[in-house]
Image 1 (tube, rainbow, N blue to C red):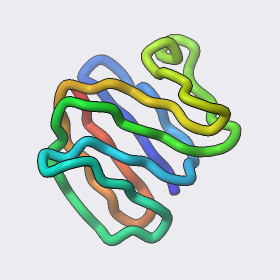
Image 2: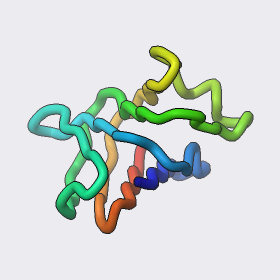
Image 3: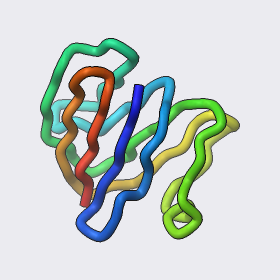
Length: 93
């Protein structure tokens, strides 16, 4: 699936991933390939992106924390997420 993480300043990441987990207002939830369509508000926490050979734009790479060889975390204050047709768009503050 494709994930795009966007802030008011820039697109921080766009690429193919295995999964993405987000901090929903009712708790963290994960989306995988073929997840049902969803729109949700996000709370303060980490967006967790998992995939192989993830490529980050050098200008924004420092905002992500590498947890292991395939997992990266991006801290956010709030936002929204939309999952539809195997594309996740995270609008984050």
